[in-house]
Image 1 (cartoon, rainbow, N blue to C red):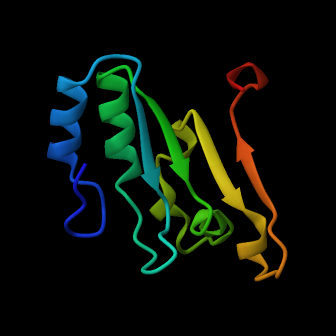
Image 2: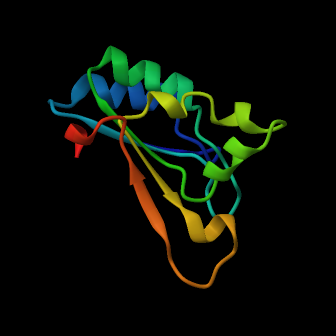
Image 3: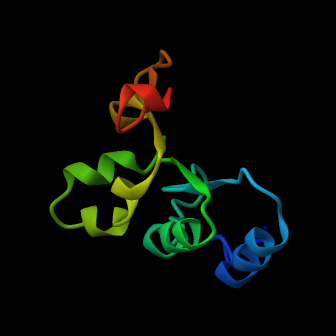
Length: 109
């Protein structure tokens, strides 16, 4: 799905989800490493609900915004994901990799 402005094109995503066969998985980004762009997570979650698609959000870089009272609203919709990845080493600028995959219930694994 194209991302001409740096975030997912919602109309193109809707078209793709309409045309594709099930099961479907959409991967959204919450903070790109290069520019910090955050996909419109709530709107993407709405499309996933409409099209019965699972949603994974890569919050490896932007996930720590949850700790910011000023900027956490940029991650609205993160709680609607079926799975989320976070890179703990990016939070503390650590030289060793430390990532995690979070799911709402263990049976989702």
